[in-house]
Amino acid sequence: MCQAIDKRISVIKGDITKLEVDAIVNAANSSLLGGGGVDGAIHKAGGREILEECIKIRNKQGGCAIGEAVITNAGYLKAKFVIHTVGPVWNEGTKGEVELLDRCYKNSFQLAHEHNVKSIAYPCISTGIYRFPKDIAAKVAVNKIISLLLEHTSIEKVIFVCFDDANYLEYKKYI
Image (cartoon, rainbow, N blue to C red; front, side, top):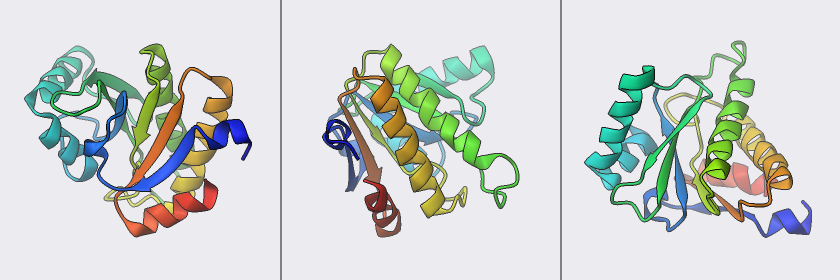
């Protein structure tokens, strides 16, 4: 990895809801109404304000499609924004899952860029209940973010936040 990118990207093991960054990415479901895993943790820690904005978005556009992203305030979180993106459920790689996951990172990064975000934290999208293989997900995520960082110098820091050891070790391979 080139030195300019090396200083702008990192991986940690921890709780994404505790970070002081401009934006936190939420591995949301298409309803945008909260759920389990990181989605539930972000909604719980951020409070009702996030849910209220998600309801407005849902009422306007009917939710969020797989691979797409929407942005809300961050409620009680230390971040300014939450960018909600819907990752794909793994179906043995036969339904375009890799491309859809790639779009999650692209579209959430683009929203961050449009909102002048300087620092952003990503969870391990789709590697929990959606069963995306951790090794493939880490490679897709890191490769996409590196290419986007090379393209957009306005975002100064990207942090991948892994909740478990298995994801953390996979991301460390690529960073």
